[in-house]
Image (cartoon, rainbow, N blue to C red):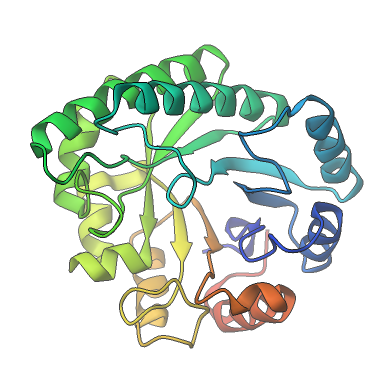
Length: 278
């Protein structure tokens, strides 16, 4: 794989100003990023007019473009599959707004997850809510020239799509032919899936990868878990993966104290697997 396929992100930078973050990402050699939609960088809960102008200026100043916009949707009060209709509809409206932000940023993708239904209700009900919500969001995004990405979640995060088989069924149930897939290496390992299995099932529709270590869960920096990340990256290369990758270190929150060191450690670990030529 090419070094060009590895892009930056603001994961673990949430306790630093966005300008400071963009300067560090640019200093590490990145010119594209996954933009995590988190306060105070850019979120869905505040008037984003003036803030969006500022963010675009910061991106331009640092030679960065946005590959995908990823609003926080697990920790924040957003759930597009909620059994509470008012909450669900409000969540969909926030993602419509997120698609507008994508268009303003010139992002290729809006990043989605399936949401979660009430644990005491039928999974079929949650599934139907997720399908309806994703279809509505994707249709609005498409009208703006934005495509969507879909990532499964772990079982503690969702009861809709938590492994490759369930993700495939959800993906096939959607109307969005332009909706691509995210492979999260921790979620994959926790579900007992494999890189080869994902790429054989979804092919080139796997457009983005979150490179994270774990035990198997945890979203750790490379080397802080016990996953065979070298093997995973080699498998991506062997299958001709042509999409983008980024790191998504969260851990117990301590990575945010010194995110640059964490990111440089991950970069050092992945560099031998990447062709530095353009």
